[in-house]
Image 1 (cartoon, rainbow, N blue to C red):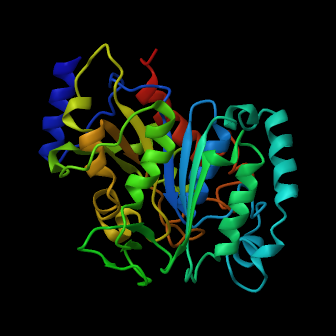
Image 2: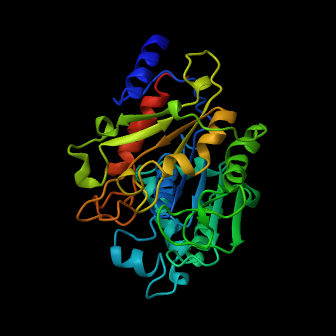
Length: 342
């Protein structure tokens, strides 16, 4: 099996696609997610739909679960910033909807959330998603977590709508525009990895080391979508995965940690090329801390011109549940990567 994996790696270097491996030494108890903007909303939806698998979430600039209630106007007005005060988001109503959705089996039981860790970020000058919406995300999660210490927040940073990191090559924290990854002069990625992954498992976060281009692989995401063509419901044909060398070897010890990171609107590879899966700071931590980073890709379409993840219903009314087409794709990817994990 190791020989097969090495062959796949060589094929990718030649410009072909890797076969998504099913034999990586991944610890099934340390699966986490992150995302920014629509990707933050998708990370929340995936966390809720499959909380029996996912143990933590880091969210940049996203409203609470099912905030839009399948309505684009509600998404734009109440959940973001437009004509209505985001304070109109009714957390109690969303909580009750979540309980009912779980009772019907369309998301995992909310008891799985009790021990999870959550990290939330909103910048004070965010002109796309009002900070108050993220405060509501905090209030929503606190209804499920066992203790408030399981939730960490960063609500005091001067900055714009972006994935905040500390790479000097990026624009300043107050910049609004592509690639929506800003240098906010602090290692927020290290902070959230420590909170949602390392601390709960009594592990120490090791300082980041340079990412290796040879460890980023492209694969056919369309092989894991429930309906073809996948582009019709906002899923790109391709996606990416970063696998450090020490996680490419077949081993009995499951020492690697799977992390799924969702780009935001105008951040897929059709718009910003490789920037989201090279510049967020995750790959450097993957190298030093044995992380496997999965980068799913949304697709731009007439209903979704900015390549956003579906958090308002363009892919169908069941978008936020475990039968939603995008979430089913993510679950298929997780199943593939975890299929041989005991």
